[in-house]
Length: 317
Image (cartoon, rainbow, N blue to C red; front, top):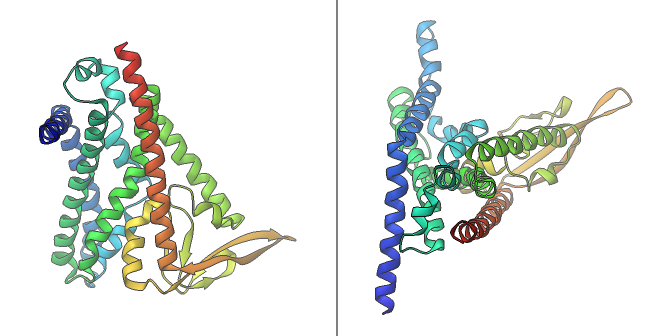
């Protein structure tokens, strides 16, 4: 009996996955997303070498193209991929009215929700795996041999998790509002607010502690020291928020014991005062960022699940 129940659950779960992928293919959603990211990454990968060739500048091999790719793939690009992947996951069912026939299928509410979340995760895995292979091959062909390729799986996992933070927020807003437009615009408003507030708090007031626990780019850290005007100098500088989790995990594996400094600047008596806000090891920063990312995912998805169950009960009453 237990085996039969497991078989029945698995059949329903796979049916939901098939339904999700088929719906996306019919809407040309996945195909369009692949074309878009392919064009953007191609431009990023080939533009500078082409400009150098046009200007007669000899091509200088860069062995960190693939490694730096995980640092550059963040911010608005990451957010837009999240929105494009998840904005219709729940809300689209209510908008088209397909939620009613979907609920008549012999699958539980939990299975429907889990299948949709896993489908979103697999779509992101496909997109980022494709981009990673493309950048790796292109980087080797254009820039020569690449360093730290063994860390690519860490970067890939981090990219998916960081994108799913915004994706889970989109799913939550879509589930609550039953509107894809509200889900997209609402999450964009949150992204804008966090980005602006983060820049002000981090660079002007030096409140990096708050940014450690906010979604997005987070605080900017460096292995160098604070320079004039609050700049971080003489070291590797990169964002340490949830958006940059993939790159942080790779840095953790390479330089976990190195210290990251976070600085800010403030105005005192008509002059700019630079100060060290905080410092910590890359390992601790990456571990904290991973915990914050998983916490956001757990909270947003739990609230989405709860709202989805209630919505189904109301719709089917």
